[in-house]
Each structure stands twice: as structure tokens, then as C-alpha cells.
Image (cartoon, rainbow over all chains, first blue to last red; front, side, top):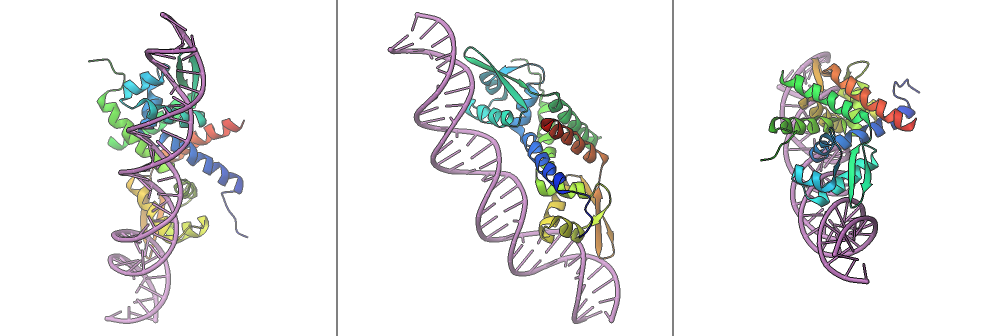
Length: 104
Length: 104
DNA sequence: TCAACAAATGAACAGATGTTCATATGTAAA
DNA sequence: TTTACATATGAACATCTGTTCATTTGTTGA
């Protein structure tokens, strides 16, 4: 038996980590998340702002919600979505730093 | 014309950001990157350690290299790969914090 | 209840992605 | 140059993923 610096426990974590990064690994989802930085928006507002169909936005919000990156708040006919977590902002900021440095 | 808090310049950045996160959004690639945290490894070492084929590892290293996340150093027959950038560690660490908190 | 609107959902489709298999390239030692 | 080994690469294939389209669910106001 040989030494491993990655235990089985950590293997599970790495899998979850990959799953987390998948949520950020799509242009539509990144744009949705960034749109929610400053204020909550309903589905139609997102769709119009991002020039996506209502259906496409809704499908992606579903993905983001199941990944606990956004949350929805019903107000009458509308459901307002916002970021579920400050981590979202810091993860994106970290990535942005990397992208910016590559151009420097 | 309506106000946008996301300029065209930023749209490009968001696209690049999604491309960056794609590199982390795969279990094989995450495992390769984490294996390179502590020390550089050649392709065969990675393949054995991660129980992947030589070809699969090589294909993924190509992706990671083109994304400037790893770099290779030839030493005779072997090519030793290592992380190209400290950002890799901090991005993964940031993600790990998020994953860990979700379990807490 | 009905009409109108907002959001969610499922099926279908096209495009992207990761692996395998076979092969080519590159390096070192005989 | 030959042989052996390390790595890279291209094609093929199966799987995954994001969008569209059609429809359903849920809410409000008449």
C-alpha cells in the first residue's frame, strides 16, 4: 500500500469541488450570477437584460438554485432571485483576478 | 438605449471567466491540479496515481497547459508538470471553503 | 370562474466534452 | 541506426449539457 496525499475523503471533496465549478463554467450562468450582484431580479428581467429566452433563464436558475448559489423569493406573480451566498462573489472575484493578470 | 451595469468589455471578461472555470469543472482535471500542489510529476506518475490512462492524462494536461494552469519542464525522456500559477491554489481553496461550509 | 401574465417543466435536438484506441513524435541508451 | 520508453495526437464514440418549443402550473385582477 502506498502513501497518498489525497485521501478518499478528499476524493469526495474534489468531486464536489468540480461540481461547484461547473456552476460557474457557463457563460449564461456567469452572466446571471453577475446580474444578481447588485440587486435581485425576476426571471423576465433577467431574460430581457441578458437577451435570453424566459425558458433558458428558468432552466439555468433551476441549476443555480439546486447548487445553492441563488435563492428565490416570491412576490405575487413574480419570483425575485438573488445570490444565496457571499461566496459566489468572492469565487468570481478570485477568477477575475486571474483573468486580469493574464492580460497584464 | 438603456443603462447596463455590464459593459461590452465586461461581457468579454465574463466569457473568459467562464472559460477559466471550465478548466476546474472536471473531476479529472481537479485531481491532476491537486496532485501537482505539493510537487511536480510526469505524465506516467500522474496516470498511475490517478488511475487514468496515459492518453487521458496527456489530453487533459494539454487543456490545462493551454489555459496556462500548468507548465511542463522536459528532463530527458520525462516531462515534469507543475502548477503555472499560485492563483490555481487560491481558486481551488476558495471553492473548497464553499463546499466545506455547505456541509457545516 | 375566466383571462392574462409569470415561471417551471419535459421532450427533443444540436453542440460540446472526455475517454479510448491506434499511432506518431521525441528522447535516451545500446 | 535500432530498440525501448515517454509523451502527444487524431479519430471515433458515448455522454453530458444548454437551448428551443410546447405545455403546465401558479398567481392576480376582472
